[in-house]
Amino acid sequence: MSARSGLYKSPDQLRAMVRPGLVTAAALDAVRDAIQVGVSTLELDAIAEKVIRDSGGIPNFQLEPGYRHTLCTSINDAVVHGVPSELRIAAGDIVSIDCGAAVDGWNGDAAFSLVVPDPARPELVARREALNTATERSLWAGIAALATASVVNDIGAAVEASIEGSGEYGIIEDFAGHGIGRSMHEDPEVYNFRVRGGSPKVKPGLAVAIEPMITLGSIETHELADGWTQVTDDGSDAAHWEHSVAVHADGLWVLTAEDGGAAGLAPFGVVPVPIRAL
Ligand code: MG
Ligand code: MG
Image 1 (tube, rainbow, N blue to C red):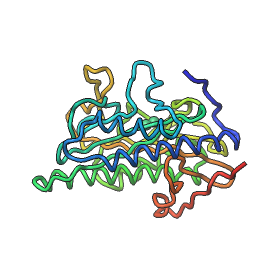
Image 2 (tube, rainbow, N blue to C red; image 1 turned 60 degrees about the vertical axis):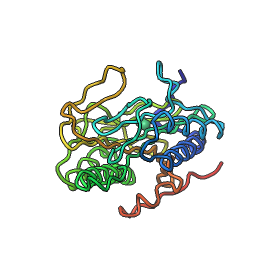
Image 3 (cartoon, rainbow, N blue to C red; image 1 turned 120 degrees about the horizontal axis):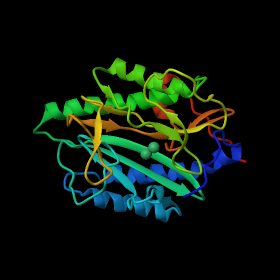
Image 4 (cartoon, rainbow, N blue to C red; image 1 turned 90 degrees about the horizontal axis):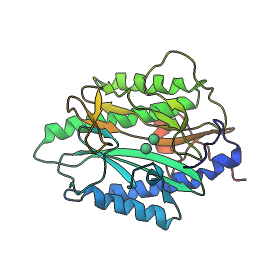
């Protein structure tokens, strides 16, 4: 659809990625506010699309061949790529919302998960909350690693170490993070686990979407008959978090967080630095 950009962006190219990142963040905020028991995932999709279009952006998931939606909505055993539908959110669901926006030909991509309250099933909710917290923490560990990483594969090592420190969880290997720029999906692949072998250097200009996908059980997945939704083989719950992050000469900046990642990175002693205006 759109041209790919190079592995290392120029300062002005990184600058161009700030706006799509913030539009993506705003769409996700609006969806987060709207999630409640009884809302359909198609209704959430419409909310996200309106935020992006009102901001002058394009829902970039719609640029994927054959995909008509703004979000991927992956519930419970769905890991990623769940398709919005008439399905309504239920109490206790663990819901992953993945969204992206393109603005002026540059892309943002981010995701969060949350557990819908269910007072009748406190143990289920606690188990899912722990999974969700571990997944979010591993995302921030991966982002924080970028501050000192020498190569891209250092990110996955940090994600895996974080998950190991959180408990007995499965790290999905069938899907990975990715470079991002003029296209939503570019090189390099960004694994969520330790990988042998070489990978590109981390240096100014690198822009990557980091997105750990973590389960309570099997790491094996399969696709549903809709041709998109990826579910765990054993039906275990999954969580998914994602941010698009830029490395620049002065530091790193989380493009899809309104605070540039300040809150999420604080526990790691990493302070994000805004990409300087031209
Ligand atoms: Mg995404
Ligand atoms: Mg992504």
